[in-house]
Length: 326
Image (cartoon, rainbow, N blue to C red; front, side):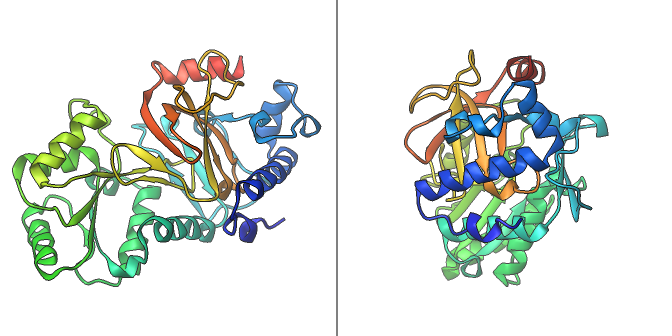
């Protein structure tokens, strides 16, 4: 069954809700792990009439199970940044063109044509390992930008700064994708005016530097780079879609992705706006894995499609399993 065209042509909340219920039924029928999870909860498709009733699969299961809808030979396995194989999440991707369509359409929705940009990537930790979905996306955006100055940079800050400054001088639109600790290194070593550059922070301190809050990090970036706002990307190995923030840590989702906030004491209860809880994600681009994911992130919705990420669960692996599987 092909849902791809329907997924990327959603134009209303009603269309999203209707398709989500169809995807739930399809994945319950064809995804062994998800079906077992639902059966464990004594939930069957006949009991699900609204998206608020759909069970969300704990994201931890991507570390221990092959999350596949139907039987297929994957084109790619995306891996999380765990230090050992057993600690890494694995996303088995049946069709890379769905991932490509997802991030290309999302970029278009929030930033316009990638051909209008010079895309600079400061993502050293991701380049050092295989199977990064972020590297796959940014590498493709670099190629699609069709700009000879677009590219990845490791430690050659001087060359990168030179390109950034020339682009600013010549009025070329530029987007700098940077992992948190690498942007912090750049900020500490180079106090430069990047006020005309979109700085896209992708997260990823993960032990490289002292943990700082997003507000603290962005405050350092703003001061050092003389920018009014720091943009952010919210994505993960287990998803094929990303949300974007254009500042203040408020994220917006593309039309085929939705955030729902679960009660930390009752993970099957969905909270109203401005209430803090666990972040659940509906990502319809995950048609061949699982579209309904309970993450280990804490956050709150501020309006229909906007949300904030406030942190992570303590002892999230253990607690997440206890909350959602026990």
